[in-house]
Image (cartoon, rainbow over the protein chains, first blue to last red):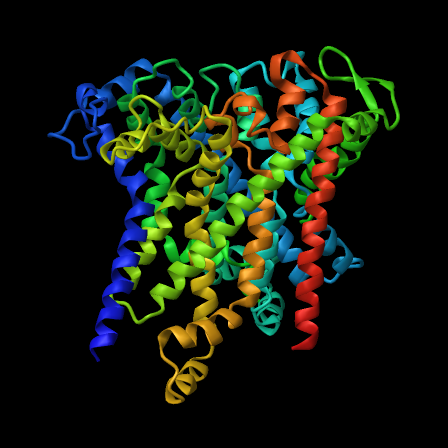
Length: 282
Length: 282
């Protein structure tokens, strides 16, 4: 029995150390953001803040365009998430409930698009988007145009279609037939019956798309060139570029940038697990 | 109902795929638009150049440095969690926290930690009397530092996938093993790990694919592709060739993009091949 308890103690010790190592950067970014400039650059480093210093947050929100960039990111992410939910629901509905010719082949093609890495098609897309113009003005020239350019390639994604199809397949077709016979049209059926009954799958897809869109880096780096059109991620990454940048200000900016996703990870964990591990569990 | 998806996929995935191939066979003008047809010239230049071999080597090293520690670390954590630990949910949340960080914010935090003068990494080493390390400025450390950041970002996902895999193992198997006198670690080694085979394999393939596509952390931590090009991976090189210093060499960059595509498709094919076989024999 003694052996067992020693073993348990070691297990706990190793786990706690591992957890601390993983959490440490999370702690550091928040603790460092409320340290005074003197404290954060002290040597040897000080790990615990002396009181609450708000100057970094004031600095981050007043001297950088972080507010504007936050708005850009919220807008970009919401449009992408909403659009992918809609396009995925429509496509998954068609694949499950509508008999049509070549359905399996088309679904295979949809899945095939998931295998194409974005990095190997980003250059043609860049040339396409920057080449397009609306009303004589380059798409990327105006603020609204930049927003369109940011979201356009991501309005649909086969992953959402795949996940929702899995979920819709479990819906009894007799129920749907009964609804249609009772005079319920496609749209009414989707809105009133199918969507409310598939909320967990929709939430999983929504959170997954939200996280992915919020975290985008490569495309926004290419498209949002002007400081006011940048997304939060690009803004954050450029805080770091300034020579001898103020670490407190950087950490405050990063803390602000992770708040929405931190909330999702803590409160929406079981939904994300479902979305993220969809490919792993067969 | 399939039309929205089909339009987006055709415009931003299928067509660019063909365009990428075509770009790789052309030279580029000052703005990156294709001009003269050069055939396989870019591929020939690439394969003949020591620089490209260096890029492939860095890419390969980066995959090894991220996938092996990431998957083994995740496995170790999950096996520890399996030893009937109290507070398992708190630990799982702790390991999931890095999820909340986008590539950009995680990279910026690690850039602050790696800061040669005031960074925590050197500060902590200093406390133990260890010399300062040029985390991002020393060619032999830069790739390792970027890899550490990447492993940190991926550990939560690995833990979640493996936990889900363990949850799917029938409890009778473990009960039978316990009756036969197999202790925690014997059961872990001879039952849990082999039963996790599919998940471990999935993680290796997915991590490899993600690692091959890694870009944000490399661009942010080592903006110039590292000291002496020590962090210049294939995706970074695609970006660099097309966009850095007004190089606008979209032709050569597209040839690299096609190489990336082929490598990633091969990884995906291996995954499907092996999984298919597993399903077949089950």
